[in-house]
Amino acid sequence: MSKPLKPQQVANKVLKQKPLFILDVRNESEFQDWKIEGNSVEIINKPYFDLLEGVDHILEELPKENVLVVCAKEGSSIMVADMLDEAGLEEVYYLEGGMKAWSEYLEPIKVGDLSDGGELYQFVRLGKGCLSYMVISQAEAMIIDANRMIQPYLDFAEDHGITIKHVADTHLHADHISGGRKIAEEVDATYWLPPKDAPEATFHFESLEDQKEIQVGNTNIQVEALYTPGHTIGSTSFVIDNQYLLSGDILFVKSIGRPDLAGKAEDWVGDLRNTLYDRYKDLSEELLVLPAHFGSMEEMQESGIVGKKLGELYRDNKGLQVENEQEFRRMVTENLPPQPNSHEEIRQVNMGKLNPDEDRQREMEIGPNRCAVSE
Image 1 (tube, one colour):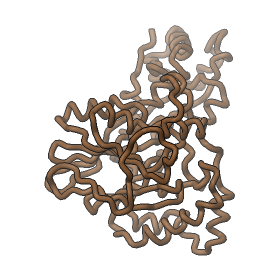
Image 2 (image 1 turned 90 degrees about the vertical axis):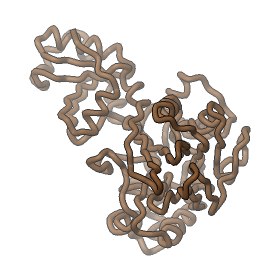
Image 3 (image 1 turned 120 degrees about the horizontal axis):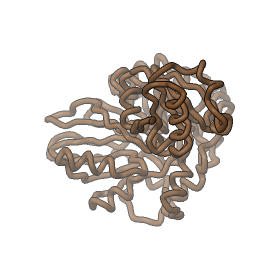
């Protein structure tokens, strides 16, 4: 019989670049839109409906052992995995919970130490390319750009004896549902949000204003808010401990943020340019840029961290090398990928205007993030 492999086990293989062969049995359009990726991952797509009468015709395309079968929710992959096992393959696995579970798994990775003993962690959502952060000092924490699945943050805090005091979003997200407000309510923390992004918010939040300093712990670790519009009108970056720049969806390792998810591309592209070519230019090139998303595994360091120094990005990131303003406008507006699934509904949820059930929230988020301008 085939055996289950948990999302955490798959993530471990991807992050540590261990060989992983995947047979994805979803339909071709779903596979092309979104799949498990990694430098050590080999993957093929054979739709489940083409395998109902047997798997003999695909055996030559598979290794003799260690095959992971993947489907949307688990059921189809179990059936195909069992068929492969009966056909004589050894060590056949299926992804427990399917791509639904893969989409929701968060892997915490330590980025580095802060002054006076603090730490910064990056929570990597491999299945959707989302990145969130936990700043820790003196057993207190601040979470930035939390995902909808709040339990991993709560469990991490409890396991490490940490009290969550602050939660913030760098902007009003359109690709995924924020867990920030829910975490704040759960642990009685302060929730921060850029007011320009949430004029219609139905809930209370503290205004994340330019140059606002948020103290975490009793040390000199400060989270300094920096108004950096462009992806949204309220987009706010964070400078943490004079070491790290949390750029939200303004700047990525290989691209730059898109300005159109609220239908304001022509209006906001100028703000985007000012942030990238002026405001960020005033910052130290030694700051490690830590974005809210990544588009491919190429953006990930060997440690699993997604990030790169600001000076290196000004040298290597093509989106930061278009000096002519009209060329920049053209590059941004002509290279916009399809908008994220259900992006307008997600914005409404993040403003508190919609409250869909858990299954609908999960459905709204399925698929890749599309927050960057195409390369």
